[in-house]
View 1 (cartoon, rainbow, N blue to C red):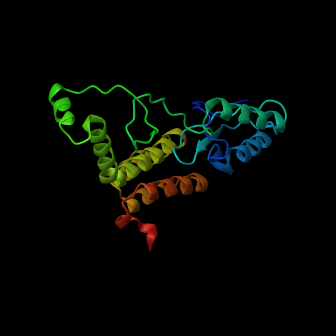
View 2: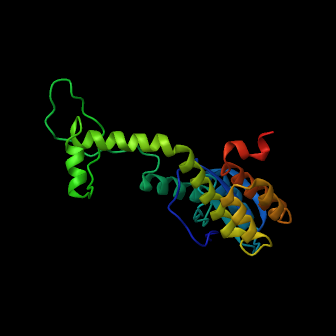
View 3: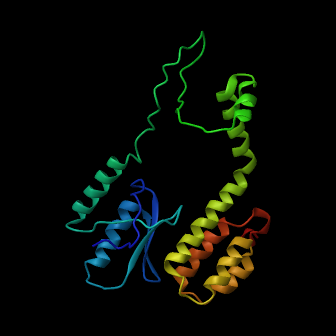
Length: 218
């Protein structure tokens, strides 16, 4: 039996996940532990829907619960190995001649499409196009780090809510409050939700709020 209806690729084996039996939280912890707790519930023959969420992204995690506990864990290990999630990153080979003191960097070569004026500007920069592009990317990462982190947190919270709470009262207003960064409004609209579901949604929503506006910081 696979408890999730919209599976994603298996995350790293020890990534933290949370499992819900409808609106009741039944397990939180590393994927391997959650899988066995979910299996114990499923083996009882209950017919309620079970969803397993990645705690970081709120993506649904597919579990194959056939066989024994050892069978389940064995498949998880093989899936993680095949997916390469726990393996070191393999960098593309760089055979470009290197001058004295030029180290071999972990550089990945990929195609970039730019207009001629962009290539002209990049080529005029110290170190050439590659160095200039790397500097631009690093600067953009630093500049937008906070906004990017908030956006990912908002997407995670909304993904969870959409998967499990879209039919609950206040869902639409809570979604608007989430993207508006309004913690008080979000809490108000989710107050009537089942307690486990509400607490998980509110925890995710807190991560999506700008630090000065976070109501749980006091």
